[in-house]
Length: 468
Image (cartoon, rainbow, N blue to C red; front, side, top):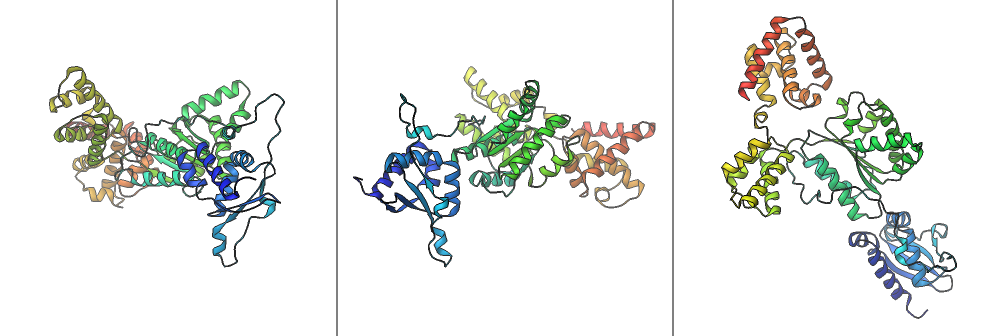
């Protein structure tokens, strides 16, 4: 051997750096240090920060390790790991036993073929189907998404941890759920390129499953999804009436969960409101973290707008930004649409973005009339009509003169907002979703037989529309 063993390890590090991303190298290879090499037994000992590093390297980079070590040290090289943290237990340094060491030889080549290069060690490629534009860098944090964003960052940095697994994210359309799960996938893929990450919509999953049934390849379909390390499924409410798709996903979910893989789901409602979903799936959805993403408040809308304006190179006065934020219904999609339209008008007509232009764009793209309808306004309207206080409706009183307004209030809120039943119940006296569903059912049944009651509801609805 012409070079010193420790210098050869430096060459190995150069090859590792050339064949993985910078983040993966800094995380998993750079902390590994040369300790000793025995030329007689060809045993190479390297120090690693912990046993977790040894396990991760063996699981995710074994091919790359083999190619590099054989190229640099030669055939027969035996790699032994020394987890440094073991020496802090008071029992003295420990080496991984020879039974768990890696013994490398060059794989035999077919005659007439070129010897393999280090790049041949790259893992099987999988298109993660992620949107590279939806990252944590442009996912602006606010009160409505803080918990979900922080947990998402933690998952991306520690994909092997089982904390918060599965993660179930729910919220109304346009609140940023798709952006968030994409950001988790993008970050994980950047930090751990060996991980098999896949984003898919529930609808496309269902189409793929249907095709697999037709082609008699269901087992292959299931086997493929069971190889994923981080599975991100969007809009799972699409499966509420698809029983066979649910059954198939249950087997995939169960395998991934039992083998320590990550599952992140996005939905427009909490698990308790997924009527028609298999009960055994619902129990698994609920065993991790259920995180709500609410519509952004006005301040977060301002922050999102300012970020998009800066990235798009626009010049928009603060007064116009404030106006857009206050009229775009708290929908991130509406905000994006307004900004894109303003950009187009500004470029085509070479005109500054001012308040009249913003008003014109918003009238064409946003249903502003929905903005004024809130749970508080609707409950107050009902209370005013029946001459009861909101405190009584939100309280525990079971008298008929309070129970009827309470039921009507829940019915009206569900009718005029997109709020899930669980959220309505929480805001109306801290009740559960079943109470809301029962109240709405009672109102609907009474409307069928009580004309006076129907007239009362019509009067209340007219007042609600007037306020809107």
